[in-house]
Image 1 (tube, rainbow, N blue to C red):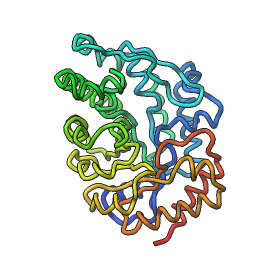
Image 2 (cartoon, rainbow, N blue to C red):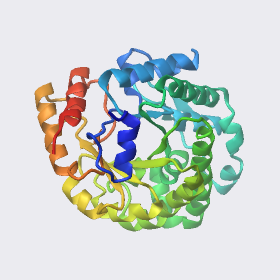
Image 3 (cartoon, one colour):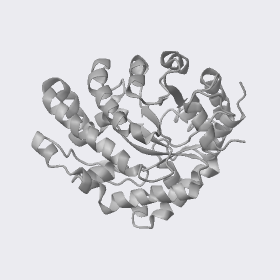
Image 4 (spheres, rainbow, N blue to C red):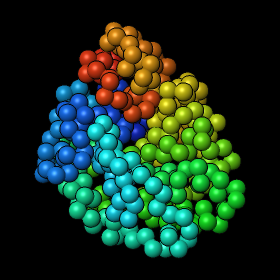
Length: 344
């Protein structure tokens, strides 16, 4: 019988897997808050403690796909000189915009940000997770795409206005966030045993940015990051929140191998659009299904999702977005078991 990592490799390669692989956490904070600890607390403890909690919870619920690097974006921006606010339940938040002008961009030091004590802790925690894994599950390092990073540095509302009023400034900012995103992933991929990269780009949602701006300001910088990381020969997965049906056809040109879609996206339509160019993941609703329904209902709803998207391979089961602390472990196990027991 194949291990989780081999099953996921099959899906990315469009080979028929032994069974449908499944992941539970996109953002990765869930294991911490179900164990009653916060990232802020863990940062004062040995990295091995965070790795042990993170891996144990994912293993307990039966996840095949695990992301490492929870909180990386906020800690990286703090390393650049930004202000962040820790949350007792979830990843840290950016407290205030760091960039207002081109001069501000030029003053940012990426190598120095990567060498801060908190970022070093984060990398060591990822390395400890690799040790616990013994090449069994598929470990992906999580980080942000250039467009979303630009919104976090500048403020999303200001970025949205600047797309119309200050295009040159946006171009400069995106040049920097390409370097920031790629440098972070390269720095983390120095850890031997990571199988892929998981790129979150929530600000590229259809709820936030038009198809036109998606094509001109999201796709090119994302493609530049993928080109810079290509020689690592790692698997690549992107998640974009909201309904992205009208822009799915643009994603394969970036070189990304799998796209994770929100519960707002029709899986049948998504599979037709991607047409074997890019694998698909998703998309059980994390609130109205995983949080609100009974375990039996979760199992049934998940089976329906699989009936639509899992036939012929090229599909990994994930929640439609990150899950909250309110999702019971019983429901998560029903979600996971639905994938492991599904038959075509």
